[in-house]
Image 1 (tube, rainbow, N blue to C red):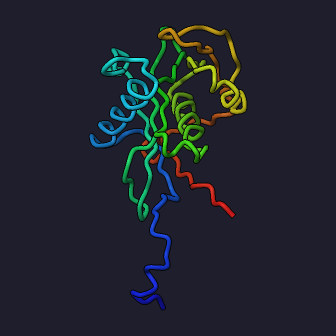
Image 2 (cartoon, one colour):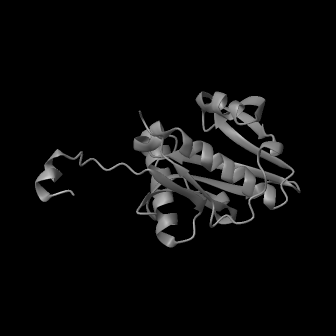
Image 3 (cartoon, rainbow, N blue to C red):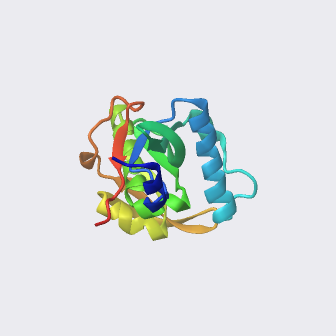
Length: 186
């Protein structure tokens, strides 16, 4: 039995062990996702001046990774958007962002990518594309993506890449999404 005197000996640093990755279902999730994008793309990377929102947001599905406390979503720690392209069956993923404090988890970006492609696959996607920052190309290659060409987006080196849809079974329930767990250090 734990008594109150024992609490001083416990590590009081909280770290979430479970994350819910799904389509944003509530306004607070969308608001936090947009704030995270601004923090990453405007403040941290300096790609945009005030805001990274554009006309694509109006036709996108917003996906979020949320840290959970007691199984309940608590904070948006990652996001990506998906949207139809210009041709039938073409889908795009863009604005993938993970909060700097959660990047060491390693699995949040991967799970967001997995849900993005799997969700588009369920919606009739024949081709899933993304403009990937060059430092992230090795990660995408490990996830079954092919580099199509090197390009520049907003003055930064990127690679246009295509997902192998065979790696991503359709996800027909994006609000339930995926649950992923933190890496346990031994």
